[in-house]
Length: 144
Image (cartoon, rainbow, N blue to C red; front, side, top):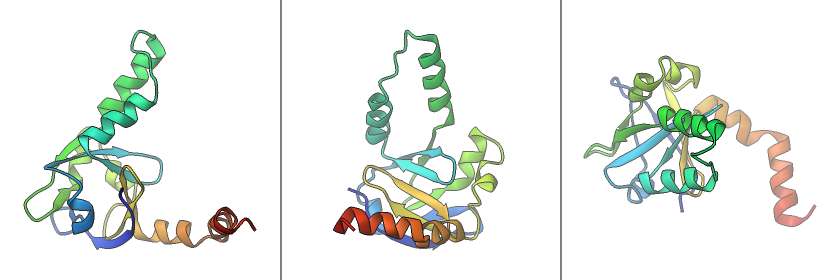
């Protein structure tokens, strides 16, 4: 299970170093999927399990198109020997994706169970510190 939050910075080649504790749970590759606010990273196996959990019917025209788009959005990126992931690779799949997500400078890598998320650090800090998020968590944990 991927947990924790880790502040990182992009290097001059748009690479980010994964935390060692997360890196140990991955092999040589990560599947990167841009979402609305962050970039999601899955092992190839957990990506396949996630896609299968959507219960899309490849014989349905709409589901087949959704599946095609989902797989087209995914970018397979090698994790180098230093544990770095080249985020610039996502722009090869969809031009300007990294800029749209604000993935430059300071980043936050957040464990999210079966995947990790890479956030712009300022966006993450706003989201994580919001009163609504704190209240929801307190209510969930302590029934208040």
